[in-house]
Image 1 (cartoon, rainbow, N blue to C red):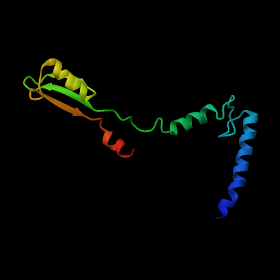
Image 2 (cartoon, rainbow, N blue to C red):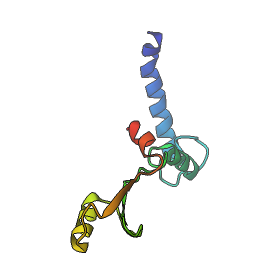
Image 3 (spheres, one colour):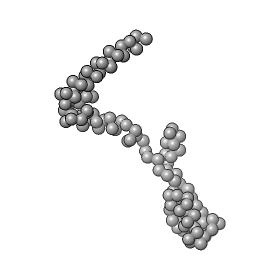
Image 4 (cartoon, helix red, strand yellow):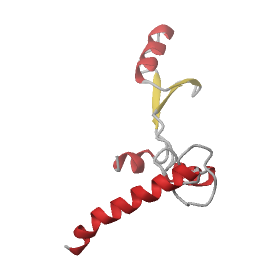
Length: 116
């Protein structure tokens, strides 16, 4: 409970320190480098961006569908959506019995989508 009593004092000190640093046009994070009108210097801004969720982890790619002719084992096309596979087969006059449709996922898809 003593920490809750110190919170208003800490907030006031942080606001005062922020106001002083912005008036001097120095970085509000490190307090050393010039900020050129921004709140943080370039080094602190870069570190904050690199820690943000914009650059974390591998991107989650969608599935790919590969259409392979069953008789010749020839790859006909690769598509990103199932609807495109169906359109390809209808325009080529092929049925699902004549082709194999292979669905490929990105290697980290199951891991990354499990945490979201």
